[in-house]
Image (cartoon, rainbow, N blue to C red; front, side):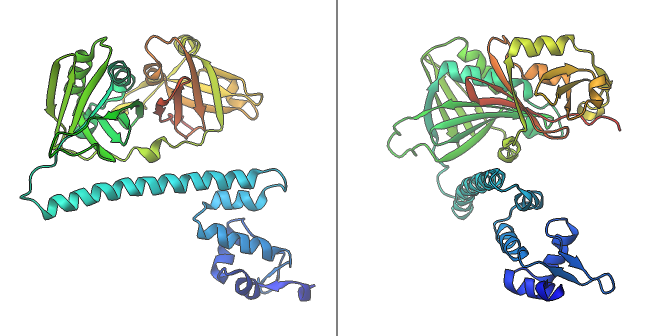
Length: 374
């Protein structure tokens, strides 16, 4: 009976949600009323829905996406699904806070430069890294450097120093590759600056290639210096230097925070062999609309992974996940010698996929999937 129900106004008052918000969440399938008057369209809510409305109000305050709000309210009691969604959202918020801190650090430096335009140029930030690890990091990202003349900033390798970690990044918008190298600060000379919490430079691809050639198969450590628009690298008594690209590199961090549905572990050589031998379809999905060979990665309802051609019988398999990829791009993302174990992370047909090296979680590639014709 209506006497046992709350009106939409009463629920709004008791939950902290507005009437318009309750109408929106009804239309979005998040919190439907227990009864709608067929004549007036007025909404009535059951007593037990007050708890859901109050929970919804708090989920809204912390910025939980609508789909996740729906999942939290619909989660089966005792399943742990709602808690997992909260943990994932907290991680996103923490990442966002870390990003904001880095940006604010850069903003402060830019303000200082703007307000002290006649001051001495900023000092270099000097640090050391294992030569072999730096060489491997350059090898791991080089394939993803862009070549579009209209996007010159992507024609280089980003050296992104954050405390004791140097991250190398390259992207051409269709894929992005990252590699991490642990570094140690060099005691600054008198008047020089210590290693900054966050500083970066984009090395033109020619300079990055020259650095890789200088490293060769060297052991020991390499000394690097970033700052004032220049890069200096010294290894084995040899020194190379050059100007960094005078462009702001895109914020890559949100692009590489993936939430995969499937993690497939397999030998790199096995995946390479499957991609080389699988049938493909030629589709206009490459850079500038160029045709590329597309392979289909599938995971069936039992978790079995396979590489097939778009249009194969697996397209209709119930419960199968299908992700179309540029076959050549994925091959380039695999380690050149293909010796070890890989982890392939898949989220959905239009979600970026990641290729990780099992023993180096900070070195990985992210590829955009190819949209198949309807």
